[in-house]
Image 1 (cartoon, rainbow, N blue to C red):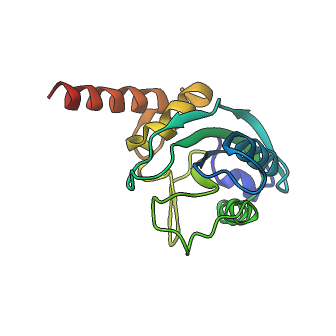
Image 2 (cartoon, rainbow, N blue to C red):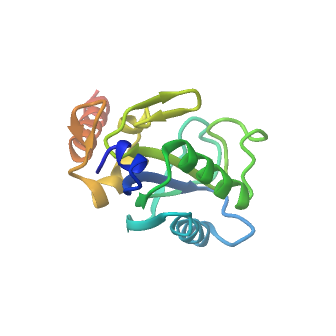
Length: 178
Protein backbone atom coordinates (compact mmCIF):
# COMPACT_ATOMS: atom_id res chain seq x y z
CA UNK A 1 0.00 0.00 0.00
CA UNK A 2 1.35 3.43 -0.86
CA UNK A 3 1.12 6.67 1.03
CA UNK A 4 -1.06 9.72 0.60
CA UNK A 5 1.78 11.67 -1.05
CA UNK A 6 1.32 9.49 -4.11
CA UNK A 7 -2.07 11.03 -4.88
CA UNK A 8 -0.59 14.51 -4.91
CA UNK A 9 1.55 13.34 -7.80
CA UNK A 10 -1.54 11.83 -9.47
CA UNK A 11 -0.50 8.26 -8.70
CA UNK A 12 -3.00 5.81 -7.24
CA UNK A 13 -3.07 4.70 -3.61
CA UNK A 14 -4.47 1.46 -2.22
CA UNK A 15 -7.32 2.19 0.19
CA UNK A 16 -9.16 -0.38 2.29
CA UNK A 17 -12.92 -0.02 2.79
CA UNK A 18 -15.14 -2.11 5.06
CA UNK A 19 -18.71 -2.71 3.88
CA UNK A 20 -21.68 -3.79 5.95
CA UNK A 21 -25.46 -3.92 6.04
CA UNK A 22 -28.13 -5.51 8.16
CA UNK A 23 -31.21 -4.11 6.45
CA UNK A 24 -30.49 -4.32 2.75
CA UNK A 25 -32.02 -1.51 0.75
CA UNK A 26 -34.62 -0.74 -1.87
CA UNK A 27 -32.11 -2.34 -4.27
CA UNK A 28 -32.65 -5.75 -2.72
CA UNK A 29 -31.44 -8.06 0.02
CA UNK A 30 -28.23 -7.65 2.03
CA UNK A 31 -26.03 -9.54 -0.44
CA UNK A 32 -27.46 -7.62 -3.41
CA UNK A 33 -26.94 -4.36 -1.52
CA UNK A 34 -23.27 -5.13 -0.85
CA UNK A 35 -22.69 -6.32 -4.42
CA UNK A 36 -24.26 -3.13 -5.79
CA UNK A 37 -22.31 -0.96 -3.33
CA UNK A 38 -19.07 -2.62 -4.41
CA UNK A 39 -19.93 -1.84 -8.04
CA UNK A 40 -20.59 1.77 -7.03
CA UNK A 41 -17.17 1.99 -5.38
CA UNK A 42 -15.53 0.71 -8.55
CA UNK A 43 -17.33 3.48 -10.45
CA UNK A 44 -15.94 6.34 -8.36
CA UNK A 45 -13.70 8.75 -10.29
CA UNK A 46 -10.12 7.52 -10.57
CA UNK A 47 -11.00 4.36 -8.62
CA UNK A 48 -11.13 0.64 -9.27
CA UNK A 49 -11.67 -2.39 -7.06
CA UNK A 50 -8.44 -4.40 -6.78
CA UNK A 51 -9.80 -7.16 -4.54
CA UNK A 52 -12.76 -8.00 -2.38
CA UNK A 53 -13.52 -10.46 0.37
CA UNK A 54 -16.38 -12.86 0.66
CA UNK A 55 -19.42 -11.60 2.59
CA UNK A 56 -19.49 -12.70 6.25
CA UNK A 57 -22.58 -13.01 8.45
CA UNK A 58 -21.80 -11.32 11.78
CA UNK A 59 -23.55 -10.52 15.02
CA UNK A 60 -24.34 -6.85 15.72
CA UNK A 61 -22.02 -4.85 17.99
CA UNK A 62 -23.22 -2.13 20.35
CA UNK A 63 -26.97 -2.41 19.97
CA UNK A 64 -27.44 -6.18 19.88
CA UNK A 65 -31.23 -6.24 19.45
CA UNK A 66 -31.17 -5.84 15.66
CA UNK A 67 -30.80 -8.07 12.58
CA UNK A 68 -27.53 -9.88 11.83
CA UNK A 69 -25.05 -8.04 9.61
CA UNK A 70 -23.42 -9.04 6.38
CA UNK A 71 -19.88 -7.62 6.25
CA UNK A 72 -16.92 -7.64 3.93
CA UNK A 73 -14.03 -5.53 2.72
CA UNK A 74 -12.35 -4.40 -0.45
CA UNK A 75 -9.10 -2.86 -1.56
CA UNK A 76 -9.52 0.07 -3.91
CA UNK A 77 -6.91 1.66 -6.10
CA UNK A 78 -7.77 5.36 -6.16
CA UNK A 79 -6.41 8.74 -7.10
CA UNK A 80 -8.96 10.43 -4.81
CA UNK A 81 -7.47 12.23 -1.83
CA UNK A 82 -8.55 10.80 1.56
CA UNK A 83 -11.17 13.47 2.30
CA UNK A 84 -12.64 13.18 -1.23
CA UNK A 85 -12.77 9.40 -0.90
CA UNK A 86 -14.56 9.68 2.45
CA UNK A 87 -17.08 12.12 0.93
CA UNK A 88 -17.67 9.69 -1.94
CA UNK A 89 -18.22 6.79 0.49
CA UNK A 90 -20.79 8.83 2.41
CA UNK A 91 -22.55 9.74 -0.85
CA UNK A 92 -22.77 6.06 -1.80
CA UNK A 93 -24.30 5.32 1.61
CA UNK A 94 -26.95 8.00 1.02
CA UNK A 95 -27.68 6.60 -2.44
CA UNK A 96 -28.45 3.28 -0.72
CA UNK A 97 -30.86 4.88 1.74
CA UNK A 98 -28.65 5.52 4.76
CA UNK A 99 -29.35 8.58 6.88
CA UNK A 100 -26.57 8.75 9.48
CA UNK A 101 -28.34 11.56 11.34
CA UNK A 102 -31.62 9.68 11.80
CA UNK A 103 -30.32 6.36 13.13
CA UNK A 104 -28.69 5.58 16.47
CA UNK A 105 -24.94 4.98 16.47
CA UNK A 106 -24.31 1.24 15.94
CA UNK A 107 -27.96 0.80 15.01
CA UNK A 108 -29.47 -0.91 11.97
CA UNK A 109 -28.34 0.41 8.60
CA UNK A 110 -28.91 -0.11 4.91
CA UNK A 111 -25.22 0.38 4.15
CA UNK A 112 -22.10 1.18 6.13
CA UNK A 113 -18.87 2.09 4.35
CA UNK A 114 -15.81 2.76 6.51
CA UNK A 115 -12.45 3.97 5.26
CA UNK A 116 -10.12 1.62 7.15
CA UNK A 117 -6.71 2.31 5.58
CA UNK A 118 -5.42 4.79 3.03
CA UNK A 119 -2.04 3.56 1.91
CA UNK A 120 0.33 3.76 4.86
CA UNK A 121 -1.04 7.15 5.90
CA UNK A 122 -1.94 8.15 9.42
CA UNK A 123 -4.61 10.86 9.24
CA UNK A 124 -6.07 12.60 12.27
CA UNK A 125 -8.50 15.28 11.14
CA UNK A 126 -11.96 16.35 12.21
CA UNK A 127 -14.24 13.57 10.96
CA UNK A 128 -11.42 11.54 9.36
CA UNK A 129 -9.29 9.10 11.34
CA UNK A 130 -7.18 6.65 9.35
CA UNK A 131 -6.33 3.91 10.11
CA UNK A 132 -9.78 3.34 11.55
CA UNK A 133 -9.17 3.65 15.30
CA UNK A 134 -11.13 0.52 16.28
CA UNK A 135 -10.31 -1.76 13.36
CA UNK A 136 -8.11 -4.01 15.52
CA UNK A 137 -11.03 -4.57 17.94
CA UNK A 138 -13.52 -5.66 15.29
CA UNK A 139 -13.60 -9.19 13.99
CA UNK A 140 -16.13 -8.19 11.35
CA UNK A 141 -13.46 -5.89 9.87
CA UNK A 142 -10.36 -8.02 10.39
CA UNK A 143 -11.67 -11.39 9.23
CA UNK A 144 -12.54 -10.19 5.70
CA UNK A 145 -9.28 -8.22 5.57
CA UNK A 146 -7.19 -11.28 6.42
CA UNK A 147 -8.64 -12.85 3.28
CA UNK A 148 -7.53 -10.01 0.95
CA UNK A 149 -4.78 -8.02 2.71
CA UNK A 150 -3.28 -10.20 5.46
CA UNK A 151 0.29 -8.87 5.06
CA UNK A 152 -0.65 -5.17 5.03
CA UNK A 153 0.74 -3.31 8.03
CA UNK A 154 -1.51 -1.20 10.22
CA UNK A 155 0.72 1.88 10.62
CA UNK A 156 -0.54 2.93 14.05
CA UNK A 157 -0.13 -0.56 15.52
CA UNK A 158 3.09 -1.78 13.95
CA UNK A 159 1.50 -5.11 13.09
CA UNK A 160 -0.03 -6.68 10.03
CA UNK A 161 -3.72 -7.32 9.59
CA UNK A 162 -3.07 -11.04 10.12
CA UNK A 163 -1.24 -10.31 13.39
CA UNK A 164 -4.09 -8.05 14.57
CA UNK A 165 -6.61 -10.81 13.71
CA UNK A 166 -4.56 -13.39 15.64
CA UNK A 167 -4.30 -11.02 18.64
CA UNK A 168 -8.05 -10.35 18.63
CA UNK A 169 -8.87 -14.06 18.48
CA UNK A 170 -6.40 -14.76 21.32
CA UNK A 171 -8.06 -12.06 23.49
CA UNK A 172 -11.49 -13.59 22.85
CA UNK A 173 -10.21 -17.08 23.67
CA UNK A 174 -8.76 -15.83 26.98
CA UNK A 175 -12.05 -14.14 27.86
CA UNK A 176 -14.03 -17.28 26.96
CA UNK A 177 -11.75 -19.44 29.10
CA UNK A 178 -12.49 -17.15 31.95
